[in-house]
Image (cartoon, rainbow, N blue to C red; front, side, top):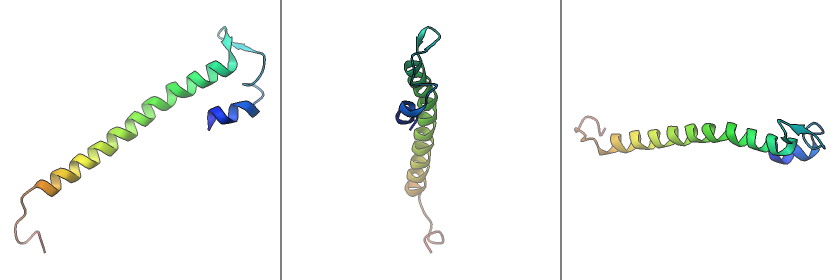
Length: 67
């Protein structure tokens, strides 16, 4: 969304330099750096839940637990 919105944000889409680089480039790189760890965290949590569910289903069950 941030990349799509950048076209209509005047402080991003303009003839400016941030840190010596075009503002749109800095905006895009910043969002990539923010989103990558967030997506990695979501994926890790998803894999942990899947592994926990697989471990629960692989555990031996007694006759009382099946009811």
